[in-house]
Length: 330
Image 1: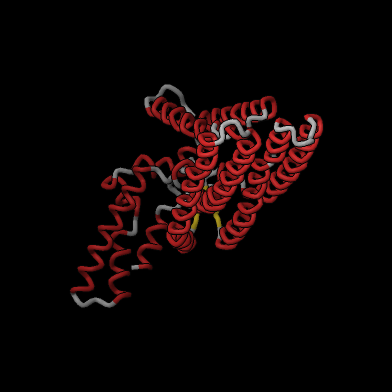
Image 2: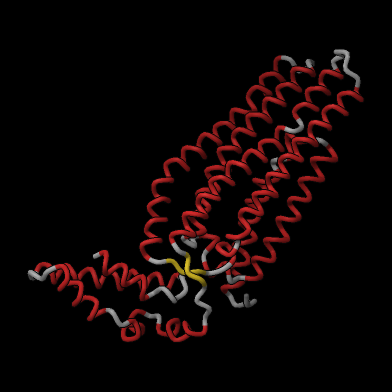
């Protein structure tokens, strides 16, 4: 059966990964499997059964109309086929992504932790512990800028390392059946780790606010202790983000290679959605940085990201509905 599946993948290699094509592929595979099992039950050898199945179902032009993909097949020659992604490219990309995930996670960790010192020093200054406001502000801002600078350096370096693989996210591509199976097996084996890391991250985010709430209830007038608890909150959230990013980037790499969800060819070809997404996240990032640096409310400004994520999902769904109704052409 592996030979039949490989042959089937090659038959559909130059067709877009649309829902209609995937449905036709699944239907044809079921037909081929039924015929294969029937031949095996009749006493045919493996090679004989495979040969008969391929000879009977191996011409997609003859089956296209019954499968409902004749128009897709007729237009296939006019659609760019995209490049072929090899096993070597897959392994190289996954390796670079794993390394980049750790570096980016550290960069985000540093950004979240960067205001901790200024918050604690401000609390010490307000509590008359011998630290002036100028020292608290100068020392805290100095450390903040150093940590942010290191984080930005990590982001830039990783951006350059991943730039050679940008086409995987932006362009449609083809992948041999054996390579695709390899990626799917890795994705399946990674699911338990992914879920564990996400669960740990969510639990840490919930736990993070507990020390601050307890402190605010029993020592609401102790500004220094409250400031320290804000620092603890930021640190715990930063650790949670480490889990989110490392797990999320690796899972994202599998979805990129398998062209799933937001990386499906139909979405890659949607230029309007790409333009809106680029503008949207630029605005969100600018708003986050302005809010954080102007108010120094780093302990709460991070909330903009989950809100922005939910809002973007709504915008994306609205654009898809509009596109499906034919109001614009991507």
